[in-house]
Amino acid sequence: MVMEPITVGKAKDIAGRKGLKPGRVKGTNGIQFTKGGNSRLEVIDWTEFESTLSSKGLQIYESGGWMKIMAKK
Image 1: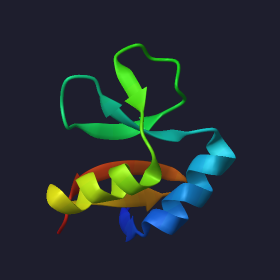
Image 2: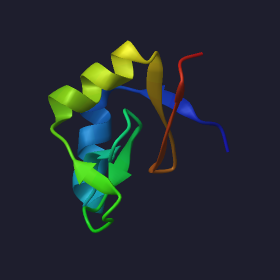
Image 3: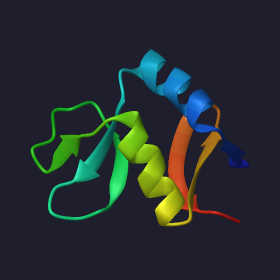
């Protein structure tokens, strides 16, 4: 399975279909996708999510509708 980089716009579309939201691990600047039910994560807006991706040199990668946040290649 090859992971390909995608835009935040495409990630928003995939997240919307899967009921996912952008989130941050409480007390850190770590980000991930969440359904909003985990008490260790707080839902953030897409602007903050995208800003964190940029400032940390991260990219969203996707394969078959499965997304992962990793360092930019």
